[in-house]
Image 1 (cartoon, rainbow, N blue to C red):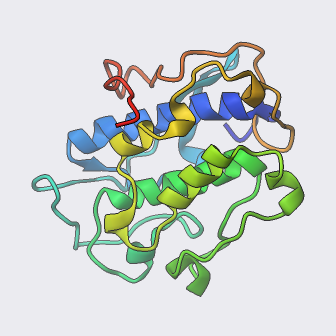
Image 2: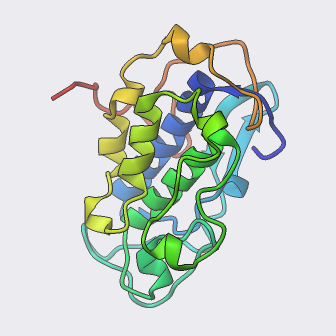
Length: 212
């Protein structure tokens, strides 16, 4: 994924939906990845900049039951670790959604919201900067970022809830196609259905979206 450049916001949306769909599938199987980052998102083909699979499950953990927490170890990469992991607290599925928020931030503007595990990360203090880059990003995309980069894990969107966010409601939004993110990751002139999902990780489509 890091080898790509030139995405539109619409392309970024398709790719990110597939990452969320993979996390939805993993979490339903009680698996927490714990080290999501761009380096672990693998393009299946050089001919399709949006067909992505999640790799490197070396730090993953299986929960004992739904809603359980992991207490035995802390893994991850600075800049993508959730506040509760940095603090050494028990953690679970929400850590993957924090990392997803960091990945979405990078997809949209080519820069990370956090550079390490300092106090700003612990308090989820970030800014939509530089303003020039964010000026062309849709309000829905920014809103999704804010709902993923939440310091309190219980207030973060789940993967399933994130897939129901308004940013994903339209699969062919021409205004998004015009938002060319030249400084990020890739380009393909074709717009795929929003929910393709890496089929090896997430068989079957997510449930239909609604505004309810």
